[in-house]
Length: 334
Image (tube, rainbow, N blue to C red):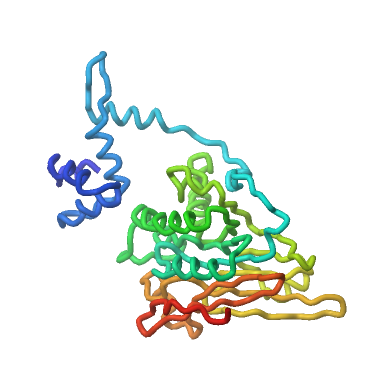
């Protein structure tokens, strides 16, 4: 860390603070000087070193060691709780919440489609949802993957900073949302578990995505089970073990899932006593992103769109793209 700092003059670091309204912009400015890539986290650390004044023997003292001691004193271990991922805002009008449900599939921020939010805004304007459910993989975490990560992509810190931009924009549009825990969303916790790092050392997921305290209306669970106006139950989850339609019949409920980017479908199965259906909801990723290069030989390519359940009837809402891979701005089927 000290070696990286020695590559920059004090004037250059201070100029980065002036040229950037936040740590990400300041890091981009320093990286543009061409000496080494600088992360937003490192900029935040340097900012504290250069702007905080610590008193020593009653006199102002800005030594780096003194600032480091202050930073260390601010670190406290948290006690994990099963309520960490529960929303704290109170909901109103819950009796009618399940009449018009907007379902958001995998986004994989920051590798989401650039028009994903605008598309969802347009869909919401059409269906006027009473409830919004996110099927998970809202972030990608490529740099933390259990598989080999592409060194050409961003480091974990830069990737998270970029992902927050999308997530916080989505939260401003949908401040109340039910979110499914997912394999990509949980990457940092699975990594920690594999490395023997206790949960006390890691922030709750809400704080990871919303360090300024937003997101209090988002509620993460493994599964969200709701009762539709017609009395039928539906389970929303990120993925199933095995065949989803068989699982629906076994659970005696309909099931809505994400995870499978190349599937965008509704299937029905009927028994002598009930009718069940499943939605596999496609995705809202950017298929051109380098993070998805692993799928270039897959026969089933990503299908972009979202889904909804309106007055107990499941619906698919495709995101139609032009020749350049951008959303056409048209919503068909309404």
